[in-house]
Length: 289
Image (cartoon, rainbow, N blue to C red):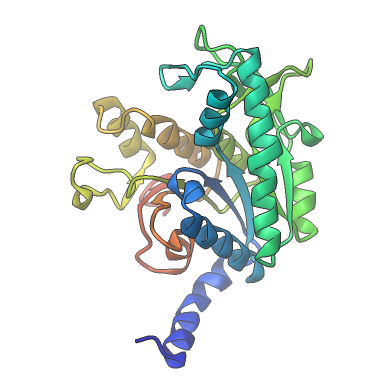
């Protein structure tokens, strides 16, 4: 049974982590079940606001695939995928932009503000935050890759005490919008901001040797180990872009990256303010971790 003394003890144990990360930037990729389940969504929002209240600077990048699919269905547009990428023709791009920028982004901003935070919604177009180019894959339409991140706008918002909430729609130099994988955007943004941490909320416990057995979770991996898991096929499917963006972020100076289970209540706080953490932590090398 929880008592006032238990609560105070928990807060006291969190103090070293608050001191360690105070003033540091943490980039959070928000997606999966934690966006669809209302109780989980409330937990994530409260975690983000808590982090901001104790002096950590959260920056949120979000997806929205299920809601895009729902709106495509309402409009009679077939959702198509190729090699894990959403085939994005011009009508689909209009829906992606409407849903991610106009609906999901503003909903999250409203939820953070209602929980006592101060959020500002952005997409990659704002302040030329993200410059895009066509994806190298053929036949996927307006799917993009990141060519450049200009973090000045995000930094100015963070310095002013706001929580940036960013959707992964961006444009090329001519203004053509592109749909970019949110994991990729989060990783590149974390590197551009020299973030202390990159945290990806997923629908798995982390990186598993055997996805049928949660007990096979890898608690910590370095870059070389992570790459070998991709080469061997242990990391496959939708986990590949997540691990790849973590590796790229680490190679560009982010100190720690984390793939955690967003289905677990208060997963962000468990990862940030406890010794054991949850999920899989990826580091540049075990020697420098």
